[in-house]
Length: 369
Image (cartoon, one colour):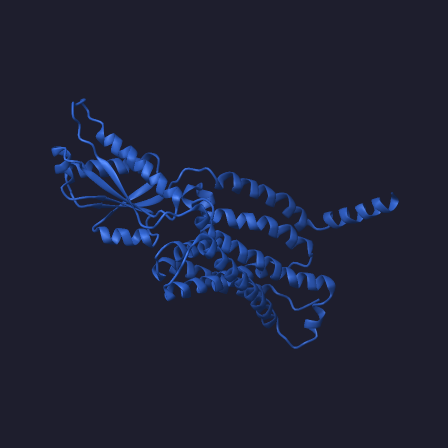
């Protein structure tokens, strides 16, 4: 038993002599609890609804006032006025707005004449959470409009006609962009900054230090190797996922943008992990961090539940999370008939994020034992 206690004492001393490892093991599980507790089951809020008023009559004004009332009270969406339907549909397709409500011409006249008036709702059904929320809100709005102040024998009925831009999206397809992003990140965790730390722990890195290679060159070589492995993983998961979910892409431009997203995502993740591990010497720290870091980056990204349902502080996390932009870009390329206009913010963020984290790694890295 003496030898057992000696081993236990040694492991405990190693733990308590590493304050970073202690803080990581205590605080990150708490952060994981907060994120998981808030990332699921929330109400969709802070989205944008395009409103195209082609009627400009009193009943159309009544509809717009009710939409603004929803914004003030439930804050499900913020109605934004559009001049034409085509621009609104294009903005829904590119993700600038999450839905569009079209009030057709002669809507007020049809309400007064009781000749089957209707309003049109255009939704991006690649996100079933937001589209179903919009459909429910518009049906409630129609029911409120149909309720007369004084009961009539034959009351007019206003109906909502929903137009889905895409064929039915199964949840497996909805999760595919997040699965691709997660696969790239797992590959980066295995072949990223943790490898150099293990090499340092084994003394292997001393072979690098006796060569004339500079610090930035060493970082670039390690990041390049890790990015290639992550890109290969992303390509495999993308291919298998498309086969399993029945997604087919014939447009060569969409295939090119998809490949570009894979390259940028892998580059951003490998540079991020290298930046985080630039000054780490203890090989236990990355193992303690990466498992929880996976949760901290994956769940706030909108891969499983829309960002619009998050509380304000968690939406701030999503805004700086590279997972968010990777998932949005893959979803636009795989599930929508969108072009570069839909993903250029994602491409820009990932490219800038890669440059900044690589620069930070080069500044922090020390070419010493």
